[in-house]
Length: 232
Ligand SMILES: Nc1ncnc2c1ncn2[C@@H]1O[C@H](COP(=O)(O)OP(=O)(O)O)[C@@H](O)[C@H]1O
Ligand SMILES: [Mg+2]
Image (cartoon, rainbow, N blue to C red):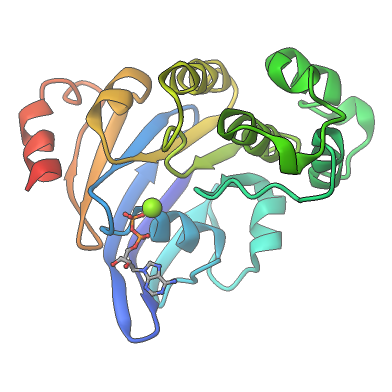
């Protein structure tokens, strides 16, 4: 479904990604693991065309994404929840969802508003609240819901559990599990615990390169190797 081949990306002169290789199959839940600053966010940004690759190729369902705008990439079916979970201020929860909705005939939606509110009862209760007045957990749920109304086939979640209370982290995990039944998911994380619980396999990134790739079969037995990379 998604392939990254030798992807390099830079901020100014600093080459942050140095040949990322990923191959994600439809229906998988995959975690990109790595310490702070190794290039996890930039990898997701490279996929979305926000930090366009300087070298290498990004393919989604066989189509080359290089050179496309972020908007075009999103329209092809990739949803991105960035780590800042930016909510449009001055808009209600519902309005935040409405502006993100993909333009589709109502009957063609996988994520009509009713299904969003069924999946996120927490948001149903506060649908008229101003987006400025949400807790961290509510913001994260709204950010994920907003990606879903864009009708993605592939969902990219950047550190979805960062800075959240344990009870919310667990809710995010359950949500990932539920969404995984219909959506391919890539999420990033710095800690192994959440990844082991909710991802089927993982890649470890270090200095802009994949230094370890686990298969589904080996993910849990690779623990020591992965931990070593994360703690160096
Ligand atoms: N906007 C930016 N301008 C310059 N350097 C950046 C920018 N964003 C990130 N970096 C640098 O790129 C590297 C990778 O960052 P990032 O992809 O955010 O890592 P991670 O998500 O794994 O923490 C880090 O060294 C970081 O300091
Ligand atoms: Mg990051």
